Image (tube, rainbow, N blue to C red):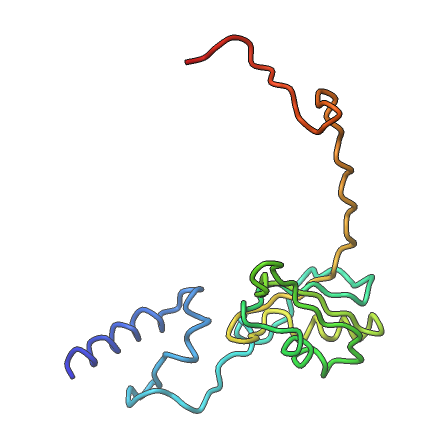
Length: 170
């Protein structure tokens, strides 16, 4: 029992101090000012900024497609669609997955019918929690074309490359 009281006091001291990193955990672990136990009256913050403040200097959207980063490995297309559906007519919600394992790579894309709906979703969902992870919503950038592979001028017609080693090493 003494160990439990010590560990909770240590956790309260570490997490409830006014450090920037502690603000995310404050709502879950901090105790009320009376010291009688956890405060169950205040809900945890829905944003990592704690007060739902707008982030300054956000560029306006030029496309209704949004890039969503910071997704949990367990987030699916359906969960992403469910989280972003309340903000407008969602045309597409896609979590990018690994080809081999099939698990999420931690990012995805959502596309709305209008730029206004996408802007509302970006403002409402940026720096919010989804599946226990903080997600960030940014405008999607157009895909850059990959450069064409260059031909190796020193390879033979059969696909083998010539050995350019001169002499014997060893």
